[in-house]
Length: 291
Length: 271
Image 1 (cartoon, chains in turn cyan, yellow):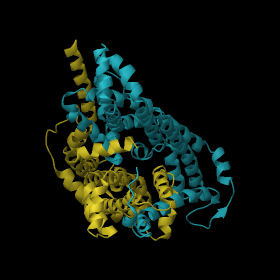
Image 2 (cartoon, one colour; image 1 turned 90 degrees about the vertical axis):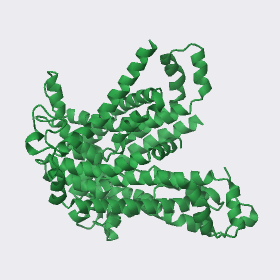
Image 3 (tube, chains in turn green, blue; image 1 turned 60 degrees about the vertical axis):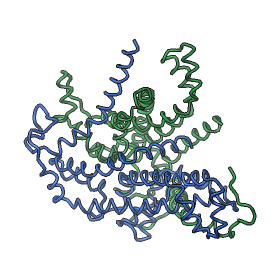
Image 4 (cartoon, helix red, strand yellow; image 1 turned 135 degrees about the vertical axis):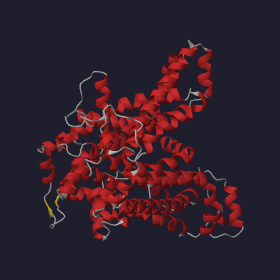
């Protein structure tokens, strides 16, 4: 869409740049420059306390034989297991909510509370509920004669507990995204299928879901890369767990900000970047085929 | 059959809503319990004795008011910077034709794809060099403008009819005047959405403030709360009261502006 002025309305040549400069300057300095730095740092022996020195691929060689790196990387992939569950639940909620009276505004609001609640607070709430001997969850299980679960103290159960929290917090968010996708389905198509005598299930399966493909893909990419970047939930829920139970960003944080090994932490960052980049790539390819 | 289906639908939604809301009620309940009731068996959802000591307790035991003030400062300054700067940039990108415009726009889109978590180490060294470590400014500045905000403002300006702007030009307004008094008021709904997003984002932000802030008097609520769970492991009631206080502003803002919030999510999903 072009909204240019005619010749006589053109502003002085410098004006657009002046308008852009503050925002763009900050973005270049605080987004793109660090992106370059991270690659450079990853080739350095760089600690906060001493002079840095070039060590070539030293950090990467160290990564390759570092079991904690592989564990945390593997866990980051493990956390992606939540994505299909999250997508299914959110889609079911969206399909249900739009059939409820008045657009299900009350349901929508209550499902959205977890989304806007700061993750630290979410973590505090759930850590309390997950407590093993006195927590409400094990109490509920006991009342159904189910033995207590080691929610946060055994691996990989603690990873699944973190996923439960992700599911609880994310469902409302992706539900709203699906609602937007569903709202874009032309009314005529839906009505025509009802006239043809399609059941709700048939209609959902054969009309709505195929039309939701772009939204499904968007949700997949966003939730999978969010799982890859998980940090705060783990930091608050299982602070005492060994690092090999945690995720890639936890490892990055530990190396850079607890051990002050900035070079090694940067190498981990580069790996994280390549992971998220592949998701962005899938996203862009998908958007291209969509149009 | 129809009615049965209707019941199943509402039963499913009601169950989901209960699961979504129950943890909050449990937190709220805990924050009003006394020590003897905290581990009562069976657990009580509605405390037998309502106690307000936890709230005064958390307020006095840690610099809770300082945390709150810090969080408010960070949220307000971030909102003002994000809205103003992205509006200026979005306006230029939407309304003027100039050299490298497309390149600048691609940079904005590219910035949206750089994950915070990836660049946190060089950002920290930069903030250190700028002598802004352990300051609120160090928390605010690196994320003062978001690519997403510029993108949204650009879309908002694109949708304003050209005639309105031309009327402003004929009146002889300067570009800055035109932007501020003619165009900005027309983007109010987008600005409202941005304000909520920035508020919720900065209020709940954790990793970056955790990295930058070292001394207790500079902590935000989230960083303070996370430290409290370390120091008050045996006093969960205080932590619960603190968490309730810290979540209230978010709930209030959300309930008042739910419409704008969902609009913003829609914009994000159809980009």
